[in-house]
Every structure is written in C-alpha cells, then in structure tokens.
Image (cartoon, rainbow, N blue to C red; front, side):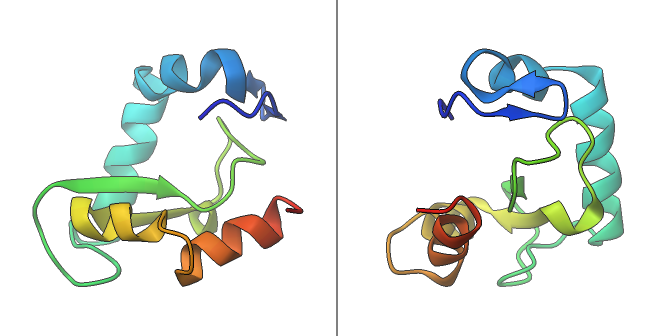
Length: 95
C-alpha cells in the first residue's frame, strides 16, 4: 500500500510493510484471528486467513472495527472493483 498517508504513527508509503512485520502487528493479528474464531468473516473458511484493514486511519492503533478476517479468495475479492468492500474503501478514503 503506497498512499503516503500518515496513520497512527506510521506513514503508509514507507512503513506499512515494516508495520506488518512487527511484533506489534503480529499480536494485533493474533488477537483479531482469535476474536473471529479463526474463520473468514465472509465465507466462514478456516484456511489462508488474512487480517484485512477496512481503514488505515488508525494504523498501529487499530480499533476492532478497523479489521476483518478474510480467507485469501475473499480478501482478493474485497479488493476487486464493484465489491462492497472496494466501494466502502473508496467512500472512506474520499475517492
């Protein structure tokens, strides 16, 4: 993600991948997966799970509502133009 936005102490352009590799994110990811019962929020799948940011505004200080658990196919679909999640991102980011 290379938006250049400043979020929660991280800049999207330079620090997003650094943040995802951090122990801080790994703990947030672990807690999120546990809270969502290690299941995809879209299809209920249990494999290839990703914790997906619905908003980057609090990156590094995410609220539970900022994150959803998606399996790889559902995560890919969430970024496809025309999907609910894609439209939601565009509205939230003012595009």
